[in-house]
Each structure stands twice: as structure tokens, then as C-alpha cells.
Length: 72
View 1 (spheres, one colour):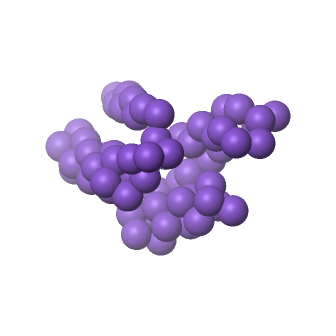
View 2: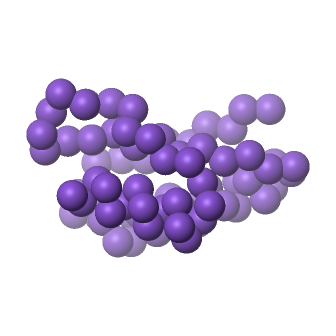
View 3: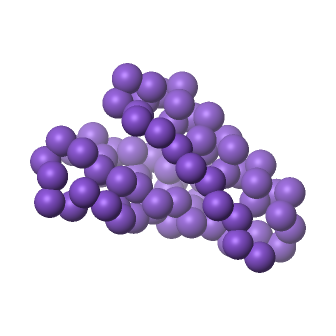
């Protein structure tokens, strides 16, 4: 339920796509991938940094790490 609520919150607040992409066979662990498209790198990077910050601020006890990759 926690993973589902995180996914729904990110989608509704940031208008991004979110998918579970790892640890699908484990009950107490999840890997989420967030995807967005923008016309400019600056806008996209700002959006992803806001999401990263939100996750770190709201789920710091559950969050193991974050990673960001921008593809042009």
C-alpha cells in the first residue's frame, strides 16, 4: 500500500509516469522509476529535483537512495 500511495502522489502532484521497476519479488522492498518529458533540460531537471527532494523529505526513513538520469 505504501508504494501505491507514493506512486499515486507523484503522478497527481507532478504529472509524471511512475512504475515499479525492481525488486518485484520482494515484499518489503521496491524500486520506482519516474519518467517525464520536457522541451528543455532545465525544466525537466528542476521537476525531477523537486520529486527527489519530496521523496527525501517525506520518506527518508524508508528511502535507501535516489538516482537521476537525463537522456537527450
